[in-house]
Length: 469
Image (cartoon, rainbow, N blue to C red; front, side, top):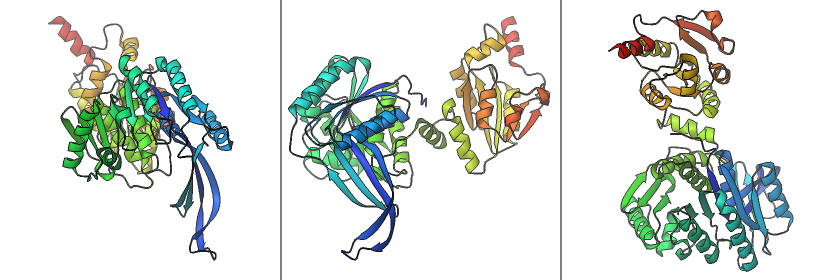
């Protein structure tokens, strides 16, 4: 699965928040009341709510923009400072309501209390009008929109209906992370992503977290509110996707749960990144499910990076083909497990018996074999016009099907020098026609060896014979 989201464009509208963490240790109970005393040693500020959704998109290298609101108060200044430091583009229209702030008190790695600062009652119609005007000026730059509704007021009926109407007319995807029991304002959205409690709120009754009840409720709500898809996040049971009678249950990625804060934001961000990049809905859901499994293993509202997702997909058998930007993180992980990493490279234009034997022998020298594969442009520069016969995607898929190849990464340069510098293999392997002192990148490997080729097998010779027939 390709995890290059650099061409994505996602606009996020919703309730922006400042998440604050007071982190420390607990050694005694207060003499004033039966409560733990937390000796604070760290104060941490992070973007929350819709701002956390955008932070996740940023970590996926996805072009994104935050449209929200905040009061002209001290917490707004903190939030904008964080957004600026993260290089997140945003518009925060001024509102009379205080900037929504959540303070979590953490003692001995456990959340002891949460303090919320917000105004539940005042609707700011002027701020809503500014949101709509800002949306109209921005929407032309984006193909996907997220409505991140935390029920704090900015995602009003008027705002949601306007966004959905404009996007439907322009054939743009709208993903809604819903709140509350009034879903009429979400009518016509492309995808709605409730959790189990939220789907129960929308149905007006408790929905048990089993496949049959979830599937029935999801399909009924999807049809009722004219949504193309409804994706239910189900904690340890994974996800359920409903789409015009087609129900699919996706198992959760096995992961120790440390903190569920912000996991829903991670899901909707990864889902949007997948769809915006052109992935199918099912691959986008798989991506979101993988991201959720990573998010719950992190502390607080921490974003999930593209390299983390690529690594997790590779580990789960999702793909042996690793994005070049993620290969370093993969190798760090392999080394942390004590694995001996072997690297080799080549064009492998027409796969033959000699290639298979060579790769099998290379793999036998260590625990993990990483294969660097020349892109089409690279092959063309090395081999000349008319090569490669098989395109890079076809060559990658065929090679990845071999049991001897654990991971494969494409490189566009004429030599794999930069790739070897990143991987720093325990063993660098090349064919027997190379002398050791001529092997590129050997200075970055612990050891360099050559393997003899099987005589009588060559891609060039095979191609020449085909031309003569």
